[in-house]
Each structure stands twice: as structure tokens, then as C-alpha cells.
Amino acid sequence: MTVDGEPRTRATSWSSSPWAWVPSLYFGQGLPYVTVMVLSVVFYKNLGVPNTDIALYTSWLYLPWVIKPLWSPVVDLLATKRIWITLAQGAVGAAFALLALTVPAPAFFRLTLAMFWILAFASATHDIAADGFYLLALTERQQAAFVGLRSVFYRAAMIAGQGGLVLVAGTLTERTGDPRHAWMAVFGALALFFFGLFSWHRVVLPRPEADGPTEAGAGLSAGFLATFKSFFGRRDIALVLGFLLTFRLGEAQAIKMVTPFLLDPAAKGGLGMTTAQVGLAYGTVGTIFLTAGGLLGGYTISRMGLKRWLWPMTVAVHVPNLAFVYLAAFRPGDLATVATAIAIEQFGYGFGFTAYIMFMVMISDGPHKTAHYAIATGFMAMGMMLPGMASGWIQEKLGYLNFFIWVCCATLPSILLTAFLRIHPAFGQREQA
Image (cartoon, rainbow, N blue to C red; front, side, top):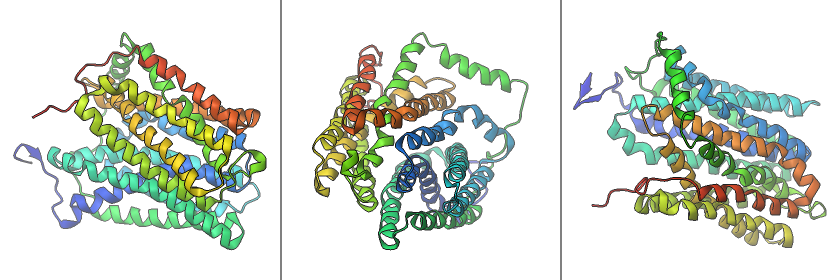
């Protein structure tokens, strides 16, 4: 049934209003991701795991997002998006509960890593279902109206996880003297939150008429293959893949070692910060400036187009890595200086990363744009996973100062490739009234 040419859902009660589920859905989407990618590093560092092992094993947790395009059709085929969302949130809650229970175990590293794997797969599945549900449950007008709100709550989850939860874990550690108890409390609280989210969304999520499993027809496999063929059949595919894989080559290594660097004592070349201070400086201040940079980057491209700003934004992503070279060389002891350096680096990254996102949007144009974008994000995740795996070993061989210098050198390939990319002059630019 349609109204003004737009589909309606069967649910019409207040509880199915987008205001009742869009904020909670995207806040719930962000928390597991930031736990897997950021909190896992802080957690293992607090419990004394070596940097080499932290980088290698937590980088493997990117794999569900790397292969997400391969199993996204399964989400379409087997059940409704609504069912997948609630099942994934229940699995996330169970994974957090098991994390809390396995922290004090003698073999905690293997057991908690297994729980992080479950969490990562459930989170990636939730991403597929939530984004698809958003398109099915809302009209085009509503999608445009709520896109800003979903972004705000996703970013709020980043701040709550990377900042607030790290701050809580650090504060509890200082009070109890035992980081294991602190992280048990954090993971236990997250488990309760997701069980509550699971119950909430079972009630408030609407039931769109279009939300149903895709029927497996004879042309499904052919269409699946055609999607990949059209993406990899580009004449400039080598250049495109090179850019996708190298754009975050420096960041992929740095992001795994920034938290250990901030936490390690001066004797190991670190800054000797407390976990609570890391949560404030890196997780809260840094994420706020990252978000501000992203907003400015989006506005800049909308005004002047991607072609004009691709090169400056690529440089803006990479040059601020020098902030960590400065911190490693001079090791300032005051929190304000460290937070300022992190804010500069994160703002530059947020500003420039917008160009990378827009580049993926540009190469995803055409009849298979959704699938092509999923493939592009898979390569983006691969570009984070593979370099990150070796970053701990490289850092322990070079020391923190030389490691961050190496990170700056690792940014050069993407800067070089940027010069050869062909961008439509008006792509991304908003039409002027």
C-alpha cells in the first residue's frame, strides 16, 4: 500500500515511530564495533598482553567486515531484517556476558578472543540488517530526515565506548587495584544494555511489508557473479584497489599502537598515562574532534566537489601523524598537551577521511551500487586488517619514536596514487541555487 507514491508499513502506533528506534538502533550498531576495534586493545594492554600479540590478534577481528559482502546475501535470503537485528543484538548481549565471565579465567586471552570473534561477527551481521531495515522501514523523505540523527547516535556510541567506557574502566581499576574486576563490570554492563536493547527492539521495530526474505531464484547466483564482474571489470581496477588498500596503511598500524603508547611507562618509550586519562584524551576529546573534522569535510566537498579536494584531504589525513612523532620524541607530561596533539591528529583525519568515503561512493555508481559499496568497504577493512597485524611486531623492533616515523612513511603510497585517480569534476558537489 502506498501514500503519495511512497510505501507504508503496517505498524502505525507511536512505538513504531522512527524516533523510537532509529537512535537506539544506531547507538547499538556503534557500541559493538568500538568494543571490538578499540576497547579490546585497551583491555588486553591493561592485562599485560604484549604489543605484538595485541596487534596481531585484534587485527584479525576485522575479518567479519572484510568478508561482509560475501554473506550479506544470506541475510536477505533466510529471514527478515527485523529478525536479524534482534537475533544479532541478543548474540551481542550473550557475547558480552561471556566476556565478563571469561576475564578471570587462567586462559583468559584465548577465551576472551573467542568472545570478541563472536561479537565481531554479530556486529557485522547487525550492520547489514540495520542498514537494510532503515531503507525498508522508512520512506525516502524519512530516510533523508533521519540520516543526520542516525549519524549523531552512531558517533555518540563511539564517544561512549572509546571515551566513557575506557574512563569507567580506568576509574574502577584505580579504586579496586584490579583491572580484571573493572573490565568484568564494563562487559557485564554492556551485556545488560544489549539484552535490554534486544527486548526494546522486539517491541518497537515496525514490520515493513517489504521486509521479507528474498526468494532464491535461478538468476540469483548469476546476478551475484555479475555484481562482482562489473566491479572488478573496471579498466582502472588496479589503481582503484591500490588506493583503497593503501589509503589507511599508516593509520592501520598507528591505531593499534596509539593506546599502548599512551599507557606504556616512560621506560618503554610511552607516556605513562592512566587508563582514565586515555579515555578522556583519546576516547573523548579525540573522537569529538574526529567528528568535527568529518562534518567540515562533508561540507567542503558539498561546496567544491571531490576532484578539487581529494589531494588536500589525502594530505590532511596523513600529515597530522607527525603529532605522534612529536609526542614520542618529547613525551610531554601534561594531559592538556597530549590531548591537543591528539585533537589535531583526529581532526585532520576526520576531515580528510571524508574524501575516501566519497571516493567509494563514486566507484559504486551504477545498477549494483549497494553491492559495489559493500565490496569497497570490504577492501577498506582489509586495508586495516593486514597492516595492523604486523604493527605490534614492527613497534617492538623499532621503538615508539621510529615506529611513528615509519607510520608517516607508510602514508606515501596513497599520496602518490592520488595523483593518478580520475575524478569527475562535479562529483559530490551540491548544486548551487
